Length: 144
Length: 144
Image 1: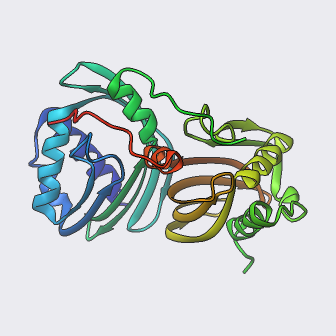
Image 2: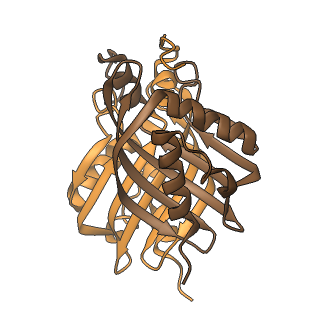
């Protein structure tokens, strides 16, 4: 039984972010990959949508310039033949401010011939923004 | 082939929210259900964690008092024997302000004997907060 594409991709991605080693990652990304991390792109320009391997490698380089991953726990996972979804909790450091950031994300990924062809990532972005700012945003209580 | 538990739960949940009909939903929730929607509970007290059927039915009643679902598109889905994950895009109305809200969420659900036993929901909460406020929150550009 061969290893699921998710595990190879996940290892290579984390190595790219923490060690800026892209050699393992590049062949695991489809040339026409469709990539989106939903969130406030005004604050974090490396969020948002990208298309194609070059654009995705570039955005991963930008992520690597901004955060370091200390640990991650995969809380839930579902694997299909060429697909995977999981919910993960990351402990990061924001490199410019040296602030610790704790972030829960969900991803849905598709692979084609072992390469990432599509990924969508959601995060609790309000919590992320408050941690990056370092202070709470005052919110009115809207709902009853 | 029997219908996946997700479809029955999803129909009953939407009916509970829009029509405040809980008769179909109640038997589809495990007595000891573990429930969490991550997000700013100061602004939206119906977010957060709940444990047990009574607490979950109560929180769904609160959601029903605050939003109406106009439509939803299931963008991605993964089904296991007793599990399901999906990414959905909802068009809602906030009932107090009559504001339209567009919300993307990811959920991971577990079922036990056809009943929901666990669910975790993530949303792009910063976008949600801005829509509910009705104005953008000024953010510094943090990342390079």
